[in-house]
Length: 421
Image 1 (cartoon, helix red, strand yellow):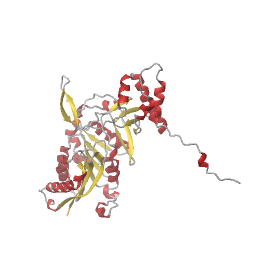
Image 2: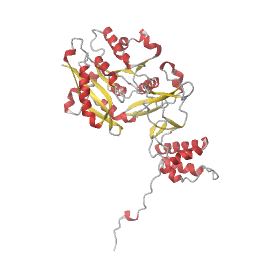
Image 3: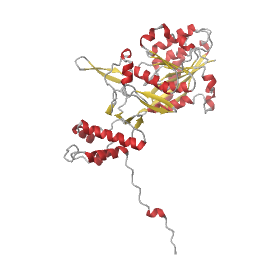
Image 4: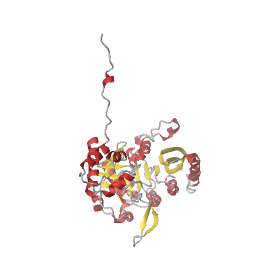
């Protein structure tokens, strides 16, 4: 009599696949000279267990999470290893990740976040008071392997040269079908903003019936402008550009400006960067640029200059309908972008309708309260002069929770809607 058996009863148990970093550590440890005391009493399996399991790939760089290889066991071991032995470890990790992903990676670093303040030193090397990290420089980046370029280039806008840009190490990624480029030694990249970038791409095709007043087709959007007060490497700039709008950008960090320029070119968008002596040149008058067809214009200067530049351009363009109709203003500074709200309101006062995207870090319990406060603050900022100001209404129609910033604190975007009744 035949017996039907379940073939799975005799199947061999599946072996747990070894993660690339664990495999690299095991191969590296076994390759150390037999007489080497580097490992001491440390078990390679224990080291592998305390190594990072995840990473982020930005070709050709692998970025490890904060705290990687910083456990007591790893810290003690690393202090005993030679530069060659450490280099061999990092190289093996890159090789294993490259083999696993099918992409060749050549640089390895640990992401340690963007400090809000930087510690300065006086001429004698003594620490002075902390200074605000206005440029959001990634000074905590821990380079493990590969040439990331010089680490002591001048940071002043007028002192960074084209030769500096060419000598730097650049990486890239693609999100929502959009290329972004940056120099990790000098510029931050926030991977968590991908959700907000995608939201902007669908902003004028709303699924919510309550937001149908946002609906606009591509032919209408191509006659509109967006303005980014903190442009960075083009996080949100590129979303507006993909929608067909033209974009005015303000950004202080020269490395971010260069990343924005390179990213725009990679996406096939025309871009004009205005910096240094050009900022004072009559040849870069904004009204003349607006009359052209360049997709995005980047001013490498304080965004306090945005309002007077736009006001002057509008005076020169008086009577030319729709030449500078600003539909969006992005205010993407954390922990709060409030310092530029008054200028943003003044910039959009001549627009029949406009949205201000106001970024803030807010405690989860305070979000609704903050929404009401922002509405009142913006209402108090409506310009008092001019024929149309009396009919301007402003409110906060949506709050987007982008990502957690700290326990109980959210990075929020408040969509303020201003329109003329």
